[in-house]
Length: 192
Image 1 (cartoon, rainbow, N blue to C red):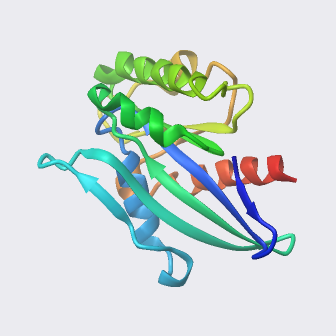
Image 2 (cartoon, rainbow, N blue to C red):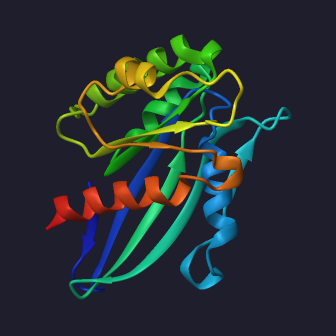
């Protein structure tokens, strides 16, 4: 849940990027960090293994200015995509205000996407969250792959609540800010 500090007139919200390993979650954060002025973002903190895969989380605080007289900040986190780090995945979801589920468009990753979505649902249940009571959006990443699944198939497999979905190529920045803007708007609308 968003942390509201009335004395400081601040709202702090938490967005989690969830999905399979090597699906593009960290790439989203790196692109966002590279495009924003230092005055609107904090440092990108990334913990990675020797193979460059996120081990625990990436964290990027964003200052979005004032909303109804409150300074609004979003903290962006990614979860490790690997199932063996499920305890970390679950922990990072605690207190989440919105989720961007990053799905890998590679046809060979279709089952992993579905399994990761189910894992997210299971982990949210640990905190009494459901996909009906938390804002979330889908990002279909790696749309530039030669073997990318059709959007229709990805929608059928993953968009079980008919939520906003976005095509992306995070490595080039395509769809990155559209996805972030959509989840931010859903969170802010919910706060009002």
